[in-house]
Length: 100
Image 1: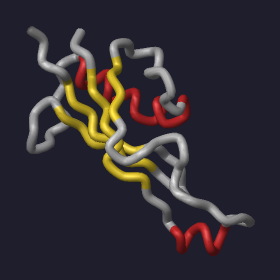
Image 2 (image 1 turned 120 degrees about the horizontal axis):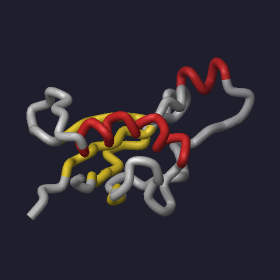
Image 3 (image 1 turned 60 degrees about the vertical axis):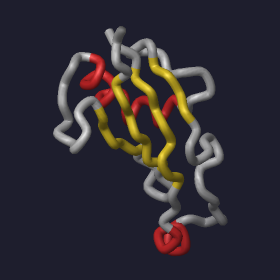
Image 4 (image 1 turned 180 degrees about the vertical axis):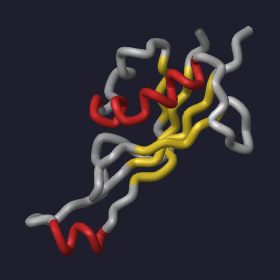
């Protein structure tokens, strides 16, 4: 199966939701940096240093790409996904790596 490259597109924060519901100050997710890249060579194990919760959220898209599925975006072999943190989600670009 092909590997999948994960690129952190954007760390976000919904400040209005934080202000209304969080009992403490929050900043964008500290697990990642914008532009950071990871390679997935397994469906089960997250890459080293990758947030396990975020991986669980995007794993279905990784499987889809590794099994040659098409999520229907402009660029074949690409998916956009994010973690489910309601205060400060992280948006990822997933790209199936071409096999030689």
